[in-house]
Amino acid sequence: MLHMLKPFFSIITPSFNQGKYIATCLDSVKSQRDQSYEHIIIDNCSTDETQGILREYAHDPRVKLLIQPDHGQSEALNKGFRMAEGEIICWLNSDDAYLPETLTKVREAFEEPRRSVIFGNVSQVSYQGEDPIQLKSCFQCRYDLIRWWSRRVQLHQPAIFFRRAVFGKVGFMKEDLHYAMDYEYWWRLSSEYEFYYVPEELAIQHRQLDSKTMKSWYHVLLEREKIFSPFYELLEEKKSVLTRERLHALASHFLVQAYALIERDRAAAWFYLQKVFLKSPLLLLRPSTLGLLRKFLTKK
Image (cartoon, one colour):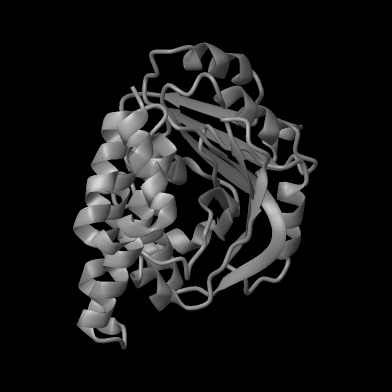
């Protein structure tokens, strides 16, 4: 019987108050052509409609539901990782989804036994109504991760898969990290394993303005700096060159956030615009940036 077979995939979904999105996530797993999976959902005692939705899906023997308090996403993921019985581990956030052929393609990629970590592309969908865009992944040198401010590395978390055996070498998530725990984990994984690229869309990554990443982008950047700053000396460039590059890149990140928030959160947009001035004031002289400044002056 289906529920008695050992699954090939263990899909871990941390959950907290994502009732608007989680059914789409669950349905995307349920509709996989490759049905050899367990879907482990760790819910942090959600207070919205999430628990009711989860209980509807919990009748499926492939769904393992754990509802209990946790101290953040990293702890929730570790609970799921320790419960996992599958050969291949997948981490799918509650507002993301898989394409129907995702697990089939991933299984094919892992037919080569020497591959322990694979990554692919994602289709990024905005809940604001824009057309989906394909985001191509890129990862060639693990030291590029140290330049956390740059775009040399494009790893999209829902499109990364790895063997359960990696836990024996690199352990689990660091539970004191809450925003950039994935990039810290890729740093440790890449110290032991080669990342193999599958040039296909393996996941759908949703971008919603209320997500933790979008609402706390500044904290994401701070945590990345905390993680990777001890390794700056491993890079060949002079410290002054890296500092100049980092400040300009940060200013660009902040400018993008200011544009994204101006229509819905003026105070947050102003916060990021001030950060642009502090990091790279010349960026404010660009014609496009002057247009943003006019919005601040004219918007009521």
